Amino acid sequence: MPKKTSRRELLADAALALIDREGLNQVTHRAIDTAAGVPAGTTSNYFRTRAALYQAIAQRLLELQLAEIDRLATPADADPADLLAVLADPDSSVARNRLLARTELTLAAARDPELADLMRRLRASALRQLTAILRARYRHPTDEQIDALGSVFTGIALDRIALGVPAMDPRVLFDAVCAGLLQPGE
Picture 1 (cartoon, rainbow, N blue to C red):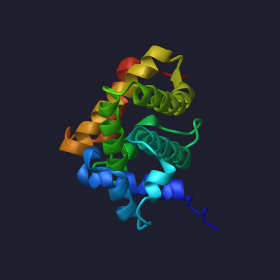
Picture 2 (picture 1 turned 90 degrees about the horizontal axis):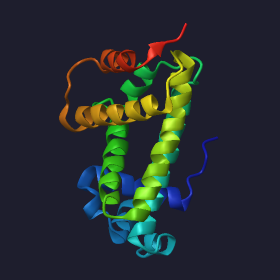
Picture 3 (picture 1 turned 120 degrees about the vertical axis):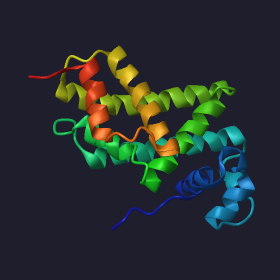
Picture 4 (picture 1 turned 135 degrees about the vertical axis):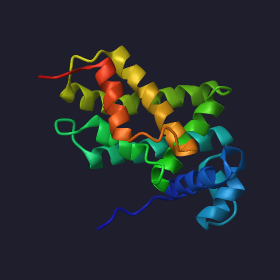
């Protein structure tokens, strides 16, 4: 039986969809109420400020991202190239939605120290997942190498989702990036 979606999840999911369609600047409490099909004022009751709303969106984004990573693979058998190709698939509305939301929230964090702290924590959580996968496949990747790969993959994913470039097969691209920075395990 599928898990029942909480009201907070419903509102955050509606906000994610709004970010994808209209951008973060158009995400208001009232717009989320309309998109979620809930009575006016519902979003404000759950998230009193824009900062609280952004935090809820970011938290939901993390939950969805980690669930997707867990669904796709376990560290022992995961191929980071396959995993990251799925997460950066320009033909996937889910990948597009999550990446655009994460990017817009990250940009907003440049002017909001509390949001910046949350986005750093969200990035660290995602990197913990990537770390487990990379350490199962490559010999002794350092924290600095994994951090750098996280940034490189984010940039590649953003270009693929937003611009459709590079046209190169993402698995080949990700393998080349990993091979250039990491030594394969024996």
